[in-house]
Length: 395
Image 1 (cartoon, rainbow, N blue to C red):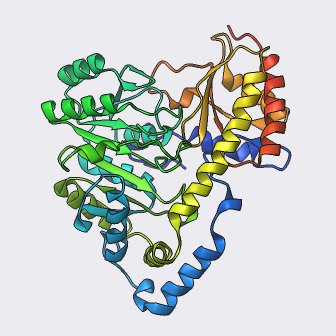
Image 2: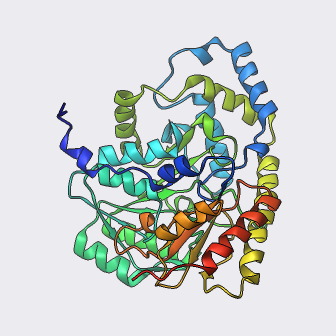
Image 3: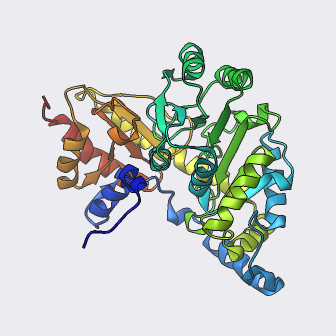
């Protein structure tokens, strides 16, 4: 039978990462494909205790709640954001079902078909999916290791009059980039000059490998006029709680809250109340420092193997934080084709092409180093280097 789907489904695409995980989630494949934190580091007992306390102390934890989120959690989040220099009031916080929903709700209330979004190339794959589903034209801006270049960014703002600039400026997915403070200030200056909204996606900002490094979120430089900022507990507590948040100008959040009412009424109340208890009784910052040390060690295991692999032609930069290595091979290598050989050899990665808005570099790949013990990383990288050494020429 033919079904009368809406025209917009023609713009929806399956996630390349999720499709790969279906293939590689078997016992004999060492996967560097998913963007997964290590479940062995989850604070399981503390989370269990937080849920118990939420149930014991407040029956409202099982009741319908405000669309904007549990007030106590919103207050806790303003305290944590203030530590990053982002000073907002609780009424300027909307709790979402992961930061992914924040991207979707923002797109729903802001974009008409044909609107322009500027972003880097490559950028976060799931954001591309969201924007495409709303029939948005995504235009890449030239960038280097410090962020978007001023000349190309300003030229495209002038010519295209974008509705939004989407960025992941801190330990980005997929390439682990950290924007310089100068580029952040320049972007904000242009946003103010041309009255353009910036969507700052910051899921990895807490996972830094140099404790002394301070990275100012773009939102900390803004007086809540031009920057919409979203983050999540998925990388620092547990993904299954599916709890993120977004802050920004009140008018935008008000419209997003109305869109959320039509979507799911509110984010899971029990989880929100449990998070309040967790933030009250659990030293989350100490836990994050453990994640930083552990993931840094694993990153170095992966990097050291690449450093010693003199017989393969690859380019990469050492990540300063986050969860990913971004690797480029010679232009004649197609990593999508290489993935089949890798899986046959018991290791998996994500080909880089799906992360590009246009003109994808077929010779790139993303590797996750957070979801495997060092010994497993060593074995998986040994297998991967063997596959890289035998990479076929793609014409």
